[in-house]
Image (cartoon, rainbow, N blue to C red):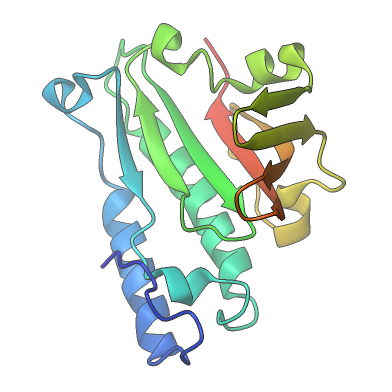
Amino acid sequence: MRRLDLHPEKKLRGAARQERRFFRAMDGLAGWFPAPEEMERGFAAVKLPVQAKAVSPRHARPGFREAVVARLVEVAGEVARRKPAGSSARVAAILEWPLLWGSELCVFADGAAAHGHAPEVRAALGFARTDWQGGWIEASAPEEDLLARTGAMLPPGFAAHGTHLRSFDRDTGLTLDSEEWVVMEIAA
């Protein structure tokens, strides 16, 4: 079950149950591949099947967040192996760190749909600062590889690219740091 945390200060209840539920749901996703009608917009995506609090840095049990990253990347590899013959679809695990709540498993219908997320394209674009009316966002290379940090193994035929994002919101005065990682099949 996916549920947003409306009370971030409250204690996480049933952490072991939440973790078991996550792994059961991910086992079910390992056998999934979207039908063509599910990819009408050019992709099909499944968000992490977990409560936000269960993967939050403050409440998650030691090792669970690392296991979530490893399992999502592993399931992406399993879904890629289930691709129908002749399919040009590309499978990706898109990870947000440290919160993980926005992480998802995506299947892009073809190379054109995957273009903006592809690790080879992101690496070629480089990093920059973007100003907007309410603040700014700076992109840079992450200090450390998320897969190495969490012990996740890159599936065969996949590549990974990470971006460290530092964003400032003028309304709140807050500066937030996060990382976005794309682990995607290499274009054939």
